Image (cartoon, rainbow, N blue to C red; front, top):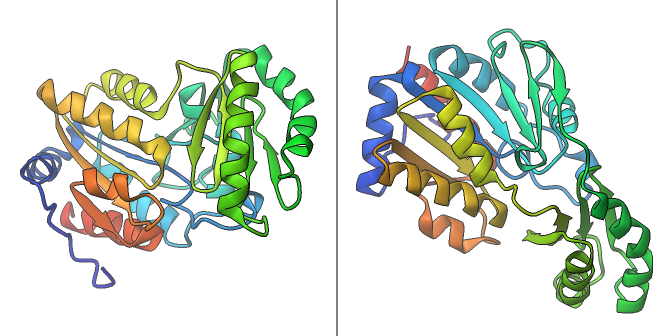
Length: 279
C-alpha cells in the first residue's frame, strides 16, 4: 500500500462498514491495538516504539472522526510513552485504554485513571521464578511486569516455540491458583485478571462515544475479542470494519478480517489514505 490508496475490504460487511465511516466520519470510531499494529514486534518489548508514520497519520485522521482510541494490553502510560502520543496537535481527544481497558489515559487531561490492581498479580509474580525454574524454560525467557498483569516472553529463547509450549501448562495452573487467566499471544503468555479484554473495552467505548460505525485494527490473539465485539455490534445494527495487521503468526485473525494490511506500515498507509479521502 505504498501508494496509500484506500483499499477495499474483501467482505460485504467490511465494505458496508467502510462506506458508513466515509459517509459520516463524525459518527465513527477508529480503534487500534499497539504492538504489532501501530508498532513493529521486536525481541525486547521495552524497545517497541510506534512506527514513525503512526503519530502523523493519527494526527491527520483524528480531527475528522468522532473518536480515536488505542486499546492495548500494556499499561496506558507505557503505551502513551512508547507511542509518543502526548501533546500532539490533532490528538487532543485521543484515548488510550491500557491493560485491556482497566486503565484509561485521556489526552485532554494527560492523566491515567485506574482501579486497584488484582491481588493475584503480586502473588503470581512472587511464585513465577520457581515455576520457570521447575519447567526448565528459564533460559532466554523474559518476564515483563505490567503492574496489572505479568507477561512471560519466549521470543529470545533458543527455541521460542518450545519454551512457549513448555510453559503453557504450568502458567495456566499458576494463574488459576490465584484467580487469574492466561492470554496467549505471539510467543508471549500473559497472566491477568479475568473479565477484562479488548472486546469488553471496545464495546464499552463505542457505547460511550455514541457512534454508528467502528474500525478496529489488531494483529494478535488478544485482538480476537475485539473482532468478536465488532461482529456483535454489527449484528446490533452498527457498521464495522475488521483490519488485520498482517502476520503469518496469527492466521485466525487474518481469516476473520475484512481487510488485511502489511503490518504497522500497512496500518499507517491505511490511516493516511483514510485521512486523505476524508479531506
